[in-house]
Amino acid sequence: MQLAMIDDKLVGMDELAPCYLDRGIFFGDGVYEVMRSYNGRIFALEEHMERFANSLAAIEISGVDLNQVRVRVKKAFESAKIENAKIYFHITRGSAPRNHNWDGNLKPNFFLTISEIEDSSKMKEEGVSVSIYPDMRWKRCDIKSLNLLPNVLAHNDAARKGCFDAILINDTGLITEGSSSAFFAIFGKKLQTTPLGTSVLPSITRKFVLKAAKNIGLGIIEESMTVPMALCADELFLGVTTKDIIPVIRFDERKIGTATCGRYTKQLIEEFHRFTE
Ligand code: PDD
Image 1 (cartoon, helix red, strand yellow):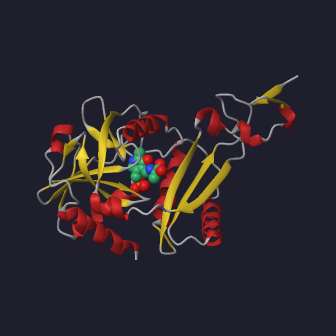
Image 2 (cartoon, rainbow, N blue to C red):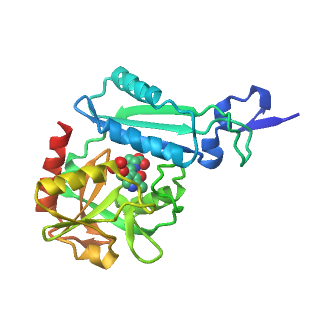
Image 3 (tube, rainbow, N blue to C red):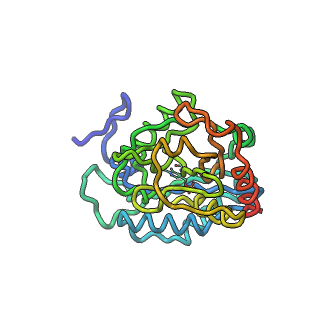
């Protein structure tokens, strides 16, 4: 008879809870979003919803009612009553016995969690260290997919080195982005970051950082840089929804600038927070 085994327990396939057959587990066949709220208000909800819709379309998960997703996000957020919340949700193609081919009629699975945003004020003041790691991801990093093993391996290598994140380096020696963040450098009065495309995630924080940079009069260069270039920067920082802007004071064990939060990074943090009010 067809059986499943969960740890030591044998279960008939017909009694198996569908979540064990989720294509998200077998293949990473799903996409996700991470949003946050500031003081009781979800930030950039529509920007995240638009990216989520793009990710679903890119892996051909159809039939998702985006307004239903929006309603669920708001319902969970209001029920959790967390002022500064991290909102994670994903949709997988659905549950079915493992088969690379998917059945077009599968019902997508939705899953969401809401948790307290960790306080990053100390990190913002003191800055963080980052290490470097090969970018081993697939060719569509613009899709926010559940295929995060290369990101996780890089992130854990950084953690072992006492670093906040790993900066990913592609086969030609160019920096793409952090394993879970966007990467920025300041040279004089110019802000530089990797151009959008299939090698990086279209980070929502990145969009607002560029807006903030314009507002404070920084020039913007959307061009990839090498590690030696990054090491010459006056300031480095990361961008990620859960922490907005995080100064980088050590890059691959080398001190950056004065190893404190740079003057323009500080101004960008202040300008960014104006968007969240
Ligand atoms: N990560 N690049 C990668 C590879 C990321 O995983 C993330 C975010 C970012 C920043 O994107 P945004 O500004 O939209 O948060 C860039 C989320 C937070 C995560 O996987 O937990």
